[in-house]
Image (cartoon, rainbow, N blue to C red):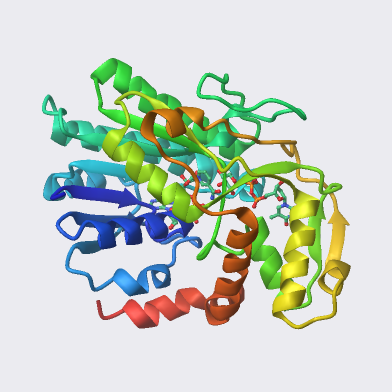
Amino acid sequence: MTKSILITGGAGFIGSHIVRYFVEKYPDAHIINLDKLTYAGNLENLRDVENCPNYTFIKNDIVEEQTMFRIFEQYQFDYVIHLAAESHVDRSISNPNSFVITNIVGTINLLNAARNIWKDNMEEKRFYHVSTDEVYGSLGTTGYFTEETKYDPRSPYSASKAGSDHLVKAYFHTFNMPVVLSNCSNNYGSYQFPEKLIPLFINNIRQNKPLPVYGKGENIRDWLWVGDHARAIETILLHGKVGETYNIGGNNEWKNIDLIRLLCKIMDKKLHRPDGESEKLITFVKDRAGHDLRYAIDSSKLQNELRWKPSLQFEEGLEKTVDWYLHNQEWLDRIVSGDYLKYYEEQYKNR
Ligand code: NAD
Ligand code: TDX
């Protein structure tokens, strides 16, 4: 493949996995990672590919319309894989406006910039919007989200992602933009910012800090290994039907408290602590406002039509994930102490 591919948000958790995957698998493609480097963006996540000849990093904010237009004109992207977003539900409760600005205004800027360079020559182009299952709202104890489930977002984060999904679909219907979308369940794996449940709790256990379980820990999430998400995105980008949405999920539902107990058990083993030691850190705290009860994805469209399926069993994936964080404690320490910002300035000031 010899395409020019823009990946937005490539310095974040999922984005860094997608960038690495494409840089390594498609040496003849040019992969351009554009990221604002918010608190969640970390160039250290891409150390292993940063000198590859087919990789370019651009620091920019997708909200800056004029610069985005100029960058699209300069690089003439064939494909856009759009992941840049404010992504943490708790932050969307304390500061909703930044979610509207980046997730909605940022997305329409990218759509306009792509339309401006693709004009009527859209045949071989793709605009891929990476979205979340949270746009569908909250399930009761039964049922699954399908691609036909009505949107019912309930947090400022999911409302902003729903807004951006609608804009992407509107550009398909109104302007024939060659879009594809996917709505994925909770991801886990290496390089996830330690504000999200799994890396936060791994960090707290290693530091003997309390594990703040919201409510009674009865909420259910459907967990997918981030490497399987990367393969799904590749499959949909290359083989998905224009204008279509694909749900991505691991068929892997866990009640929070059960997942946390499993994580504690793995951590006891890895840290050579007596059985049950880490569980003592569990602390039930006030519930998240508007906390969605259950997410569960039906990904049969992707599995049947495009032949994707998840590769990693959760217990194995969780243990590999714990091993990664314990082998990369300096990465965690730099983030938790806030020193990582100073660290990249020093590392990257002469680039
Ligand atoms: P993340 O917070 O780890 O990374 C987001 C990245 O976007 C960061 O590198 C950040 O610097 C960048 N960014 C933020 N605002 C920007 C702006 N205005 N301009 C340019 N760059 C900006 O997020 P993540 O968990 O990797 O999620 C990536 C995408 O996948 C998001 O769109 C999210 O909605 C979606 N998603 C995430 C999950 C999940 O479980 N994490 C599941 C489904 C979908
Ligand atoms: O300290 C915590 N205690 C706790 O009980 C945290 C951070 C979370 N939780 C609960 C809330 C959720 O039920 O754990 C569950 C998972 O929480 P998060 O890791 O914050 O993920 P979630 O809110 O489910 O959203 C994630 O999945 C979908 C991502 O952050 C989104 O970007 C993605 O779209």
